[in-house]
Image (cartoon, rainbow, N blue to C red; front, side, top):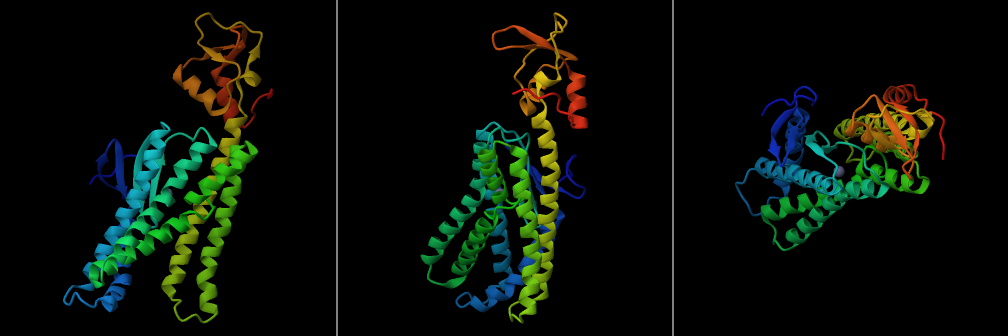
Length: 324
Ligand SMILES: [Zn+2]
């Protein structure tokens, strides 16, 4: 295991599979130990037939199965992203689950929707399969572990469908709002604010349990609530900053930034005058140049576009004089 270049310090690399780095945050190992400790008593009390089997071994098996389930969930995201030709650089397993790094933005709400929703659906499917397998077993340790795997996968699937960023359900909600309004940034902002509300609720629930004198509520729930709330709040904040960037990007358009009527140098690469946003940046990156010839669909020259003006427009948030 080595530390990969771009990941946060301390990140371990388990290996590289199909061109994708499998990364593990040290927090995952800590969480695994905490989960084994928390679940071991449960397995001990249910342990009716396997006398002598250590409850901690069962709990460790369960936690291993849980993280393998999370990995399969992430692989489902990867399969869909690759189907849409979005490059995937890494899968990171961490404290509260996993994360798949997809490079580049989804090009359409439909791509965003399917790439996101496939994760929770996979967890629910694993949960259903484990539940059916558990029902076929007549008690014993295997049944107990399988039942726990079923429960936890159904929980992971259901929680991930909550429509707030950074959860998968937030990306699904973002895709739906994007499709309805035609504005990606509006979708991100809506889903990020739902994410912040969910963060506050996650912190509040254990406090409400304790205040009501609920016997099952413990200080572990408080810590877990704070942890999940912090994870969601910071994730939603990052998404909101991303929305500003997306709004600036999608407002940039070639025609608005061009010197209309100016004849560009003969060797300047041609771009469509109708390009805007990410598509414009992609086209410029594909043929790097200081100056471009903007052409109409009938091949006539609209004017010249200087790369520096596009850079400046993106940095300053002045998208140029839009033309629809
Ligand atoms: Zn997911």
